[in-house]
Image 1 (cartoon, rainbow, N blue to C red):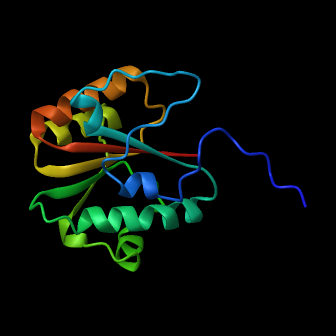
Image 2: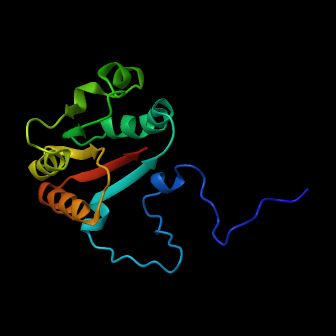
Length: 157
């Protein structure tokens, strides 16, 4: 029996990178990144597949964030329509610590996320911004630093 092709890098168990906060980043093709304090304020999680499956993978992360000891909010900016208050309850999230915000009028989800981060009333602002281009990442990082918050973007396809 032939084993599958191995790669030069060891594969991490699912979510180990998320849970191990001191884990150094792994780069391929000699990619380099200039790490600054702001870089650590913005994270992105990419999920692919059926909406229900993606939400099931996201549930423990959001549950952990909703039970954070920080007295500030967990804010969700423009979540997908499948992420309802009933889903939040069924997933075991602390709904008393969560704000669901949707942009109104001319306001974009990016502007709303930056405003929520800048205000500092949320320990984490979770957004569903696609794509998360370099400018958007810089705006989120700057706003997060100003408010002492963290940004988590969910790239769900």
